[in-house]
Length: 113
Image (tube, rainbow, N blue to C red):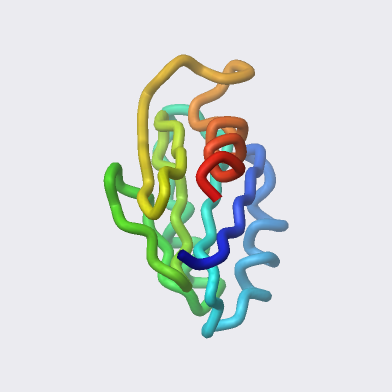
């Protein structure tokens, strides 16, 4: 199992996210997970981030096996959690009035890794 990086951002935090992704090396041996507090609104965040950096970037899918050197973005209206080696998505209760929220990702990352 490789290293992980977890990042959370409010809806207006696109500029710092782009800077972080631009700085990631193409041979990164970690997996990156991003939650942006966007609610159920449509999102093109994976497209934006993949244009700014060298790593493949997609919405995480439930049950997806985690790969090193990949950026996974929480899809709209879904909490993203990490199991041991896999992504888990759910539409559970909002956390601090938002879904997706940072807390489910950060807590699950700490527990699984």
